[in-house]
Image (tube, rainbow, N blue to C red):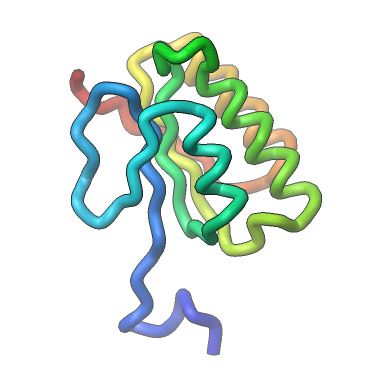
Amino acid sequence: MAEEHNPDYQWKRLFLDDTRACPQGFDLSRNATDCVEKLRSNEYDEIWLDYDLGDGLDGDHVAHEICALYRDGSIPRLKKVVVHSSNKKGSAHMMEDLKRMTGLEVVRNQLAK
């Protein structure tokens, strides 16, 4: 039986945002560099991404890293990406790339600042 079909299975989630409060039960990254490091060293079922990160890198950088890691089989557990940025253009670009390059479930959920 796959882990995700086990009723006791807890999804591992990563939340990337430089300013918003992290939802309970998520690992937190405040910048793109930390997020990519966590993706490379942990297994996540779901990742929430912001676009404007304030550290010189943006959500596109993380989205491209996710695509590369997905293609080479480094993040096999990942099932869903949620883009929660209020930047509509940046969100659309990240979602388009992630859907086209990975086939993962990619959805938008705009959070209030």
